[in-house]
Structure formats: C-alpha cells, structure tokens
Image (tube, rainbow over all chains, first blue to last red; front, top):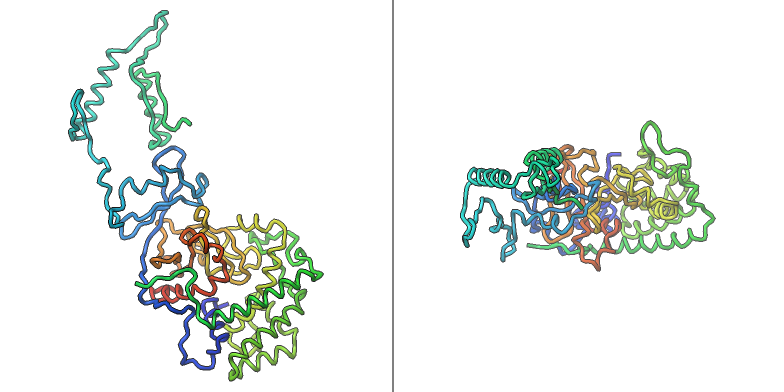
Length: 198
Length: 270
C-alpha cells in the first residue's frame, strides 16, 4: 500500500476539523509552536565495550561533530542489557567534563604523561615512556636477583620470589592476560592475582 | 529558541476529534465486556510459521465477529466527519453508499488488512486508510489485551511488523528502564521490542554508527537511515518528567508527533 499514516493522520485531522472543503485554510497538528525556530541537533550513536573491567558491558557512544557528547549502556547487549555500574556510568569523564557554564571541555585532570616521584622526594617529575619502562625493568631485575630462592627450608626446589606480586588488569583481553601471567611466572612470582577476581 | 513541552499543545480540531474517538472507544470497550466473544477465537492456534516467516497472531477472516460493532462505529464516525464537512459531496456519497450495504465495510477492512484497496470505491486512498484504522483499532486493542501470554511474546518479537496485526510502525519509544527500543503499531497500538540500531523500515543495521537528530529541549529523537533515507520517530521516556510518563502512549503521540515529520522532510528525508 503506497499510503502511509504520515499522510492519513494529517488528512484525518483535517477532515475532523472541517478543513477538507477549503484547502486555503492553514492547518497544523499542534498549536503554539513555531517549528522553524526549534533547535535541531544532529548526532551519531555507535556501540563499544566498556574498557574498565572484564565483564565487558556494551555501551552506546553519542558523538556530535567528532566530539563525544554522551555514553549510555547498550540495552541490546546480552551481558549488561542497558545497565552500567557506577564506574561505567562515569566513563564519559575519562576524557571530558562539564565546565561551570555547562559546556563540554577536556578533562584537565586526565593523566596523559608519565609522572615519577623519586624516593623521599615531595615532587612529581614528568618522564618519557622509554625512561619509565627502563626503570621498571631494572627494578624488577634488581628485586628478583636479590630475593630469588631456588630451594626452600626443606631443600625442595621452588625457584621463586615472594618479594614481588603481579596484579592483572581488566583492561587487558584474555590473550594479553595469559601472556602477562606467563611472564610473571617466568620471573618466579607466585603471588599472581587479577583485579576482576570477584 | 522555542521548546516543545510534553505533550505539546494540540490544535482544537485534533483535540475535539480525539475526544470523540476516546468516548466511542470507551463505549465499545464497555459493551465488549458483556459480549459473548472469546478473544482466543481471533488468533491463530496453529503454527504461525510459514516459509520461515512468522505470521502475526490475528486471523483476518475473523473480523466478521465484530460486524455489528463496526457498523455502529462507522455510523458515528461518518456523522462526526460529515458534521464538519457538510459541503463535501465526495464524503457524503461514500458514507451513503456504505450505510446502504453494511457488508461493504467488512470487505474494505479485509482488503485493507491484505494491503489492497477496492478500485470501485470512489474515495481517496488516504481517507480509506484512515477510516479503516479508526474502525479496527478498538477491536484489535480489546483482543490483544485479552489473549494469553501476549506480553511475553511482544518482548521477544524483534521484527519490524506488529506481532498482533502485522502492520508497520511509524513511531517508537526508548523505555524508561534501560533505554530499550519499542515500536508502536500504527494500526492497533501494540508495542513490541525492537533492535536499538536497526532501521524499522529496511531492517538495515548501521555497522558504522547510526545517525539521528533531536529537538533540543524535547524528548523526541528522529533516527535517520543512511540505507533507505527514511526516518523513524522515537520518544525517549527517560527525558519525560516522571509525572508525565503515563501520558506516553501511542494515542497521545498520534496527536503530537507530526512536527517531526515536517522537520525530517525539511532535512531531506523521505
């Protein structure tokens, strides 16, 4: 059928109001609103997965001109069915905040550089990533070499260090997490845990 | 900048007409309570799956059970229309012809449900469309609210046609609970669950993101389809004040959503 309700409703209202006979009469479904002055805002919504924990909740991101304007739970996602935890609900603030005028601006508190506070220092220093990774590697090696035990008190081979622990991140996927625990075991760590071990 | 409240003020013509419909439908609802009709007789009992298509529940041939009610409603509607259009000869002839042969109305309605319009009827297709909808709505509403487990069916339907009567939707809403998308049947007013990102017209799912526009300061959102260039109107219940959520029904939105069509067309959509 070629006709749709979009045309029929208008016609029905006109018939009911007695305006069919006189096509010159103006007719509007709703009064008191000047449509031309309404403010229209365009947006685009697409789905993503919450990066915070391993539950993997679905989210809908709303974007306007490349600017993220809102994030909400995806009601069609089988895991969270539209809900989000408090942390997930505030994910918009990872990158943006609303200023005092109610406008969106970049979150000035978002940490985007490496900060280092030396032992006994009261100040943070900005360092580059290469420096930070080298520092972490040297401290891991130093600690491991100093504390590595090949046997325990009964003489049983253990090849371990109890001076370090590894805590997995839920922001890593399953494969990454597998590799990280392999690395931790290669170092001799026995205290291995994950932030999403609920 | 203007803002649209919820619901926006409707014009006097619309208000009067819908008040009239409300009264008529209420009378029908009351009289159906005492009628010797079983809602289960109007729906398919056999498997509703044919050639991998799930058919809607309503059996078109069962319309004749409502013959007397439809005839009475038709007379009331025709009187209401003619009271406002005394000079319209086309309408006058049509109503006269229909009143002289009540079986003709049944045929019109069955044709309408099958997507056809009788070529012998000398009246505009748009008018036939509207009169068919107004004649069928109260009965469909009565059946769908009285059949077993219908709610559980609508929550799992996820198709772009009504689980009850098979009509398409022109309007939907995002639920107040978690923003699930529901479509409202344009014929019987049944609401059923649908995919948030699929176009209800062409069923395309926008893999790279779905476009929309909103009217600032109102709960209305219009989803735009890049595939078929059509649009779909949605009322976001989460943006309605709590005391007005009960107003968010297909009938109230029937009244007030035409401005969105106007704007969508101005923005270049079908």
